[in-house]
Length: 203
Image (cartoon, rainbow, N blue to C red; front, side, top):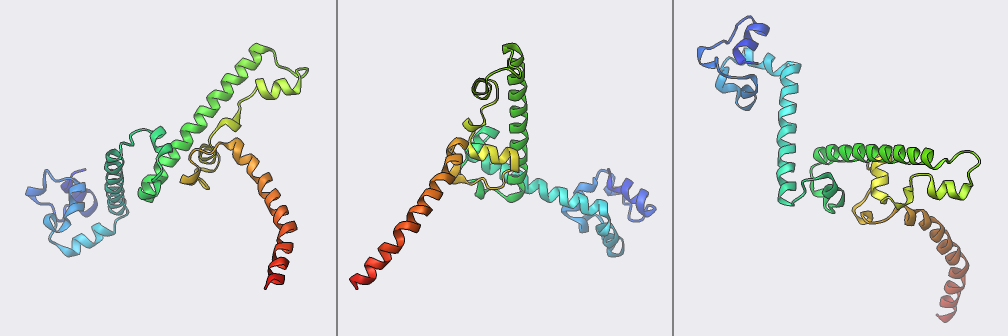
């Protein structure tokens, strides 16, 4: 919308200038005092929700374009490259959130397509209630355990819990970890007391 049209619609034509005929409202955001010298008129314009929304969109645009240029310099141009990018924390939170949301959406769509393909394949294979459990588990459904842990967290929890250290960890190996952690805890519970006792005796 043009600045003069905006002033005519919302302020009864107050502040309309001939030289502002080709000026758009977005131009007003960059330097408002260049186009409207009347402070009494300028302060209600700045207080308008539409002006605030435009200002916020402009700031977000600059933040996102800066992040985009930064990622281009790092040669990150696809979502697949973003998933494998280890220095996500160097990107601004706004851009990171938008890219992660897009990633989780794409992963959900891919999983839905894979499940649909598996369902069609099951129908083609004739898997039904009488089919053996082992066959149904290993042949007739999507194998989620071959997925990366960070992809699973991005898909199911919108990226919460995903860290750069786990970029190549498979979900299958993560599911085995708790058992090994419990085994280590039991070992330390049994062995720690004698070690501490031996040390005290040695002193």
